[in-house]
Image 1: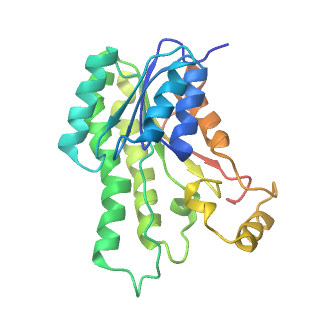
Image 2: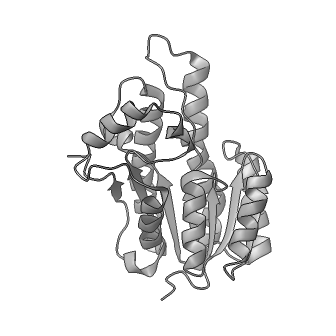
Length: 248
């Protein structure tokens, strides 16, 4: 059973990591895929080919999600190419981890701009299509750090916590037009971001997780399939933690 047959999804930060896993899972469930990243490189080309091989339409775009004008141009291009936008996944994100005493203004501003302002940009850019359709699902990629904080990640935690407040507000604004907005809060997920961590650090993390393992990008992607599909038709304004039981 394909849960997303006939729908079109726009995924930011979609060429690698969690974004790529979401794109593949959505395509496996029949969705046409538009994905963006800051640059269009060989990874983006390979993903476009992989998605197309699954029998759906797919197109990658080079776009800066933290720039409002670029976000508006992207939304217009996707709507023109695919005819509609049913699902938005705000997945673009970066880290610039350091203790507050060492954190520069540039490190703070950049993380807020890329992680949080991008959510405002893309949501604002696609809302007119969803409101006109009277249907849509917006999924914002937050983090368990946005729920509980983490030393050395004040900028990242603030951006992800801000995303949760934004999610709940948009759910209230757009609910009357049948546009839903939810957030996903991944825990420790094995991605390019975590690949460089020492093995003892990874094992230490796993030992604190009730399921005793790190999550996979596919674990997050499967949750996004649920939130994008009609199975979650009565779910909005919620934060789903995909963390193996880390959050209390």
